[in-house]
Length: 330
Image (cartoon, rainbow, N blue to C red; front, side):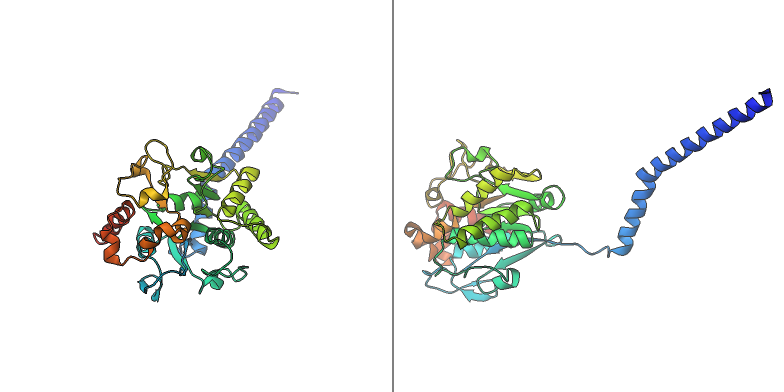
């Protein structure tokens, strides 16, 4: 092979190597820079820029069978018999929701079929099933079929819910809160949360299984009490141990005091200030609505007028009035 042929061969090799490097570099640039821009452009072109798919924040209210007066619930636009506590909690929730990204829905026995047409039991105070079980069952249906955040009746929201809703939309498929008051050291375990508040994406596998197990328990006519829903939820969590699961511990839900003792219902009805653990960290206080409504010890409180409510001067009314007054300052 003469010198000219060797030169041509070397030139061809260098050209092939250059072409290969060019293609590799272009592919790298395309994957990292050009392709994302095209995708973003197509997304903006195909979707209205103002459209925001809002997440749902749910709660539930029903008339108890003991109330002796009519209270107009502003968000329901009708007179119903509700304890004044729930009226204020409802208005506070509504105020703490970012309406640009979320929508607030209040489920009642009258409108439940609009959201869950296949709900298997009647929801009213005359039901043979405990209130806490019925509300847990409803939460499992709503979150499984629609997704969102479920707040039990009487949840006192202390700050914006944006952090929860952001995590649910972008980072996690399931969010749990606090700890079971019946399980020792439950605040240290995300597999024994409370069942008063929960959040999940639509069609979440764990929430689907939770709903299925709740229905099985119902259909087999097993023994059902107020803690059945919470026990089943803990069992499903321990069984599945989902990856995209975030847990807000008891410092976010007002379950414990500065000594890490569980705060009991009686303390809310007392006059001694409650020393919450890290009060500034509390997102909401999930009040045990079932105990408040069903325990005879607290029936006097449920029939108070608005003036009597604020003048009662117990810790619960101080907490509620503190948040309610903020509504009038905006």
